[in-house]
Length: 125
Image (cartoon, rainbow, N blue to C red; front, side, top):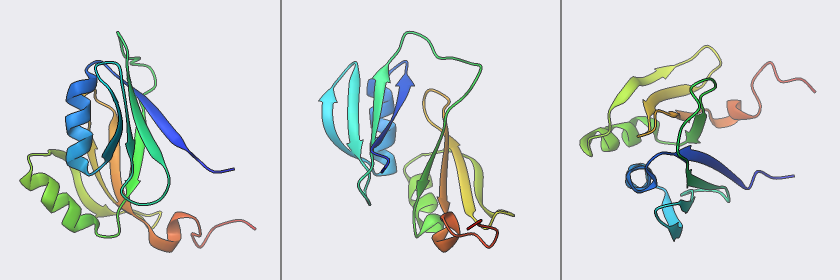
């Protein structure tokens, strides 16, 4: 099994589309104002956004995007006006993460984990 795509809800698909294009995703399906789909810059996964009338406040969504050059990416995004809620920081689980919110308040974590993404020292066999 392989993860194909993640779909998140949005109150304003057009505004969210602009945001995710700034992050570097490539738009491949454009059914504005109700649905868009992106290719990630690396790998085979896709990411889509669909229009909703309201967002659930109970359980938020967190989306992780990995980049080999996290600190450089964060700097480039800041220069484009992206605001981070947490700057790149090394974690106890051996990832380096930066946090931000998309226009709908979904948590986005840009990170670099390298081999520790799937093979941390505590991985079970």
